[in-house]
Image 1 (cartoon, rainbow, N blue to C red):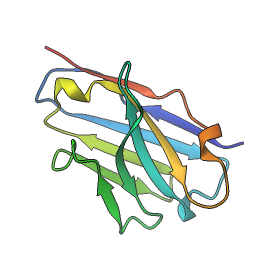
Image 2: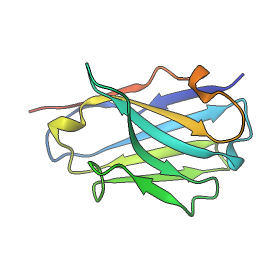
Image 3: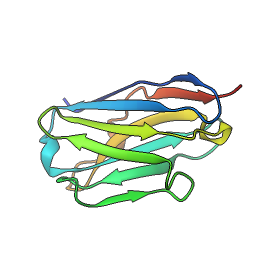
Image 4: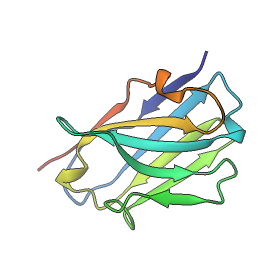
Length: 119
């Protein structure tokens, strides 16, 4: 059974940092691109960062470039998101998921982890 478990969210002041982690299971993690998404209240889901299976290709959403860093550990089936210089606009529920192949990844969303940036 495919499963994603996100953790590490919380309340942080503007300018602060948080590190999110996602543990995946139920599929061959090391051959799939992994993506962090976020969804703010009342808004559409947004791609935050993407990392290829081997970690060599990385992309970021325009709103987080230079502030967030995505990484993965294929030996532990984890993908992390280091977030720095956080802004109130980063407040959202953050999710991870996979991409590629023929599987319908939309069927396997985890519970996400809430990040709230507020003073």
